[in-house]
Amino acid sequence: MQETDPAAAHVLSALFDQGGLIVVVILVASFVALAVFLAKVWSVRADRVAPAKLVKQVRDLVVRREIEPAETLCRMDDSPLARVFLSGLRHTGKPREVIKEFLLEIGRHEALLLQRGLGVLEVVAVIAPLLGLLGTVWGMIEVFRTIEVHGVGNAGALAGGIGTALYTTFAGLLVAIPVRVGHSYLLGRVDRVVMTMEEEVLDLLDLLADDDDGDEGDTNPDLRPVEDAG
Image (cartoon, rainbow, N blue to C red; front, side, top):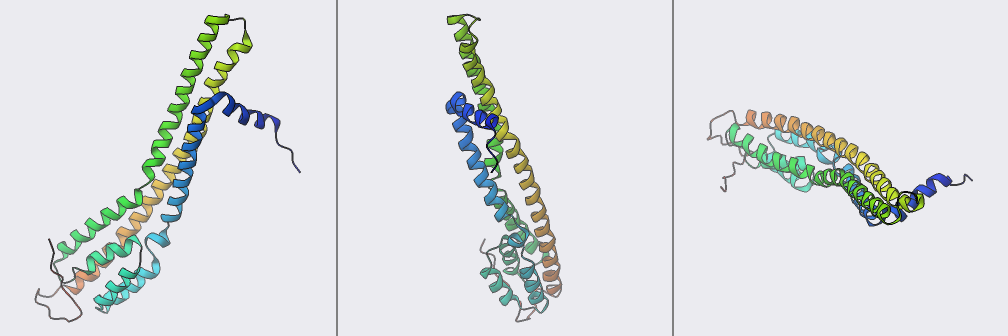
């Protein structure tokens, strides 16, 4: 069994011993960031945001002009794309631009919901190095206070303040760098699934518009115009 590296154990011990409360705060922020990251990785998946099975089923139903079953299918699905689809299906029979406006409105809302939580990662990525810098300033204050009391000849007395300065900076950067990388990764992932949603929504809009190419008085019983509550 491999033994623990003494140097690594010493660094970890010194982080808390000399970093003090500032390192504890940075550590708590890192756990919050990790929890948000894992939750977003789970929620921002292509098969969860825009399920391929749902897309196929809704498309087939709309092609057959079975709008009501398509609406029911979207209501039973909890994905963001299902809610966007439903907003368009509810306004079947209205002009293309009206349907498009409802699709875009709900789509923007769902895109914002997908980005929810990314702000926490951004805040941690910014705050962690600032907390480290705060510890650096605090450590240097301790160094100058020690010099004032003991002079520059007592290296042991100076080590405490220098250690606080270095370890808090180290902790802040150790957290900020991976959190920033994680934030960028999730932001790119959200952009990709939103783009996928946009493509599927435009395809649905084309199908609905094809259904509505006739006069506004189309009596097709499968098309159920819904009055705009607004």
